[in-house]
Length: 158
Image (cartoon, rainbow, N blue to C red; front, side, top):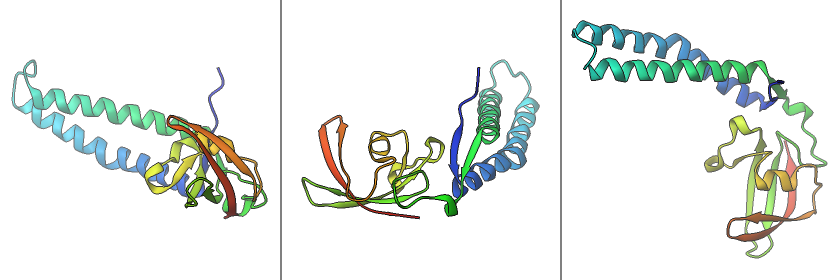
């Protein structure tokens, strides 16, 4: 089965590479030391410190595998390649809510680096899907759990 392509901006690539390096060079060592200390307490069959450390170790190793797979399947979007004629991954898009007149700015990113609290939305999110490939001036209807929101694409920049 083919692995899914992971779309990343340069910033997203660096963030994932940094996380992977931190897990491999710092967190693995920390958890190995915690396991060693917990084993030193004796009987590990009822040793909560040992169980906690082993669970954390499993989480870290799972995350390392996930990150390595994501990086192996990454397609990097360079800022220079971002098109400002239409909305694309890597673009910063200003939208106007046509009902309330408010504007919001979103950075369109791949799912791996989406962070809605920092206005980084995935190209696969409802808003991302609705505006992807559309030029400035386009009005889009976006179905959300509370109904439909109508936006106009005001600006597209790098």
